[in-house]
Image 1 (spheres, rainbow, N blue to C red):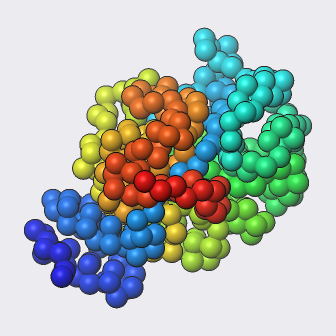
Image 2 (cartoon, rainbow, N blue to C red):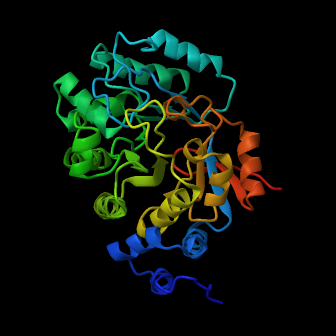
Length: 366
């Protein structure tokens, strides 16, 4: 039996999804604008279940944010510091080794590594970072650096982008997290992060990364000054890149947190907006296998609900998240494997621990 919709505009969208017809920009805008949140969720949930059934994924991962010193100082960022500013830090290779060894008894499958553009760190530092992590955690995947960092490392090393990627891959880079895109739009770039690479350069680099055989995630930072139309354009751009490269592994909607940024007046995103962003992603990104409900950004309870709005992945245990919590996130800084699986089961799904490439590690019963 077809679902009942309060908003009649959702009926043709549901029909398209059932027929496997790609949604239009107008469809995406409708998903964001509709007041029928449950209706949009039903369509996204049907698409999610068609791909993944009752499964929900998570990964045992550890975050390493090696420096918060950054020359870009984007308006939306609460994490970045100037070198002489209180709280600024840059971990030595020895400190990174210590932090890895402190948790060496834990079954970490993925190292998530990103940081600021710290001009005091040379290209050799990044190579040593990757090699050190790979030496200590030889069986864990290194998911490191954004396209912004790749561009910076290319200029720092004096190498072309392709050669820079090749060096990083040889040193141990396995995949990339996909940040730095924010909203792929000139207006927003100029207003919020003018020192960062623009969307044209981001697209150029992500295509080069995919060509080199490195998969990435894709993200969208929403809830600041962007319009609904700009969000949908962002999703369509990612969809077009995926048509060409097939290099995106998952999409991660990132809810903006304004505390300690240069936009503190902006209110937090609402649960309705967060769920619509997950649903819109699942329905617009028909060529993406996975949609994440990033519990760090939207909180543990809402991420459980998001599993019924199109998401199939809660990301990971994290262990110690710094960037979003600096901007006021109230979620835990890390969760245990048992907590992750409890969250998933209580949401009505079957937890599957995965590696970075969605190969199941274990499948647990009730």
